[in-house]
Image 1 (cartoon, rainbow, N blue to C red):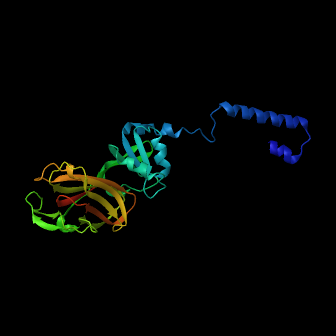
Image 2: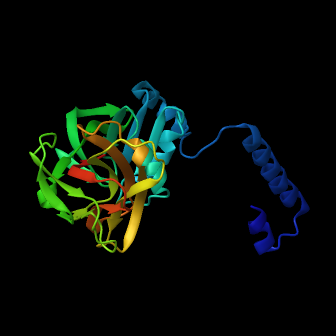
Image 3: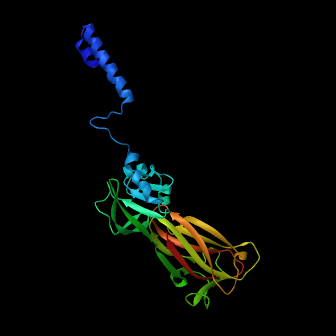
Length: 283
């Protein structure tokens, strides 16, 4: 109305005062009246109150729904956009998989829930039927853990092969004096792995010794040895018994898909080390 008066250049003082009064009146009403045309919309947090009933859970969905839903109960709900969407923080996305329950919301993302789906390197399997929470369609999923065992025969190595009753496969590889310092004791198997967390367990044995010096170094490397993601030193005093194998864990997160993944052992010299197998667990 003010723009109309300005455009027409009206000199009618009474008309201008009436228009000004109406503008002030409507402006005053809007300051305390919850007004939305054509209707008043409830808050999104109010609409999503039912998500609190899910308890401690992780949610994977479309970007516009994910972070908004987590705001309903941030202490108990962790949400992230799916891995093909606008993910703001990949480290935060990994925390979704640590929650006791995991749900997918298909609105704005999928037409239906598949039996299996891969997200952030984790294989997810559908559990149960689709259900509604508010206006959103949900379905529960669970992670499929994969586990592979690589014996000394499937790994590259130096040292000599010996009969070993304590080994799972009856034989093992042992390294001691006369080794090549430029080569790893154990390396390979040159896998292609998708993004995600992996746990690598090395099965080793050696003569117990109170010496605290480093005996070997465990490594997880990628791109055929060009990049080392995780290392752990093994000391002589870490071994408890000569007649039994011990498991040494090494865990890391692959921030993307990698080729040429190796689980290596660099022997540093000293007492002999026996290698039985290495076990890979996808987490």
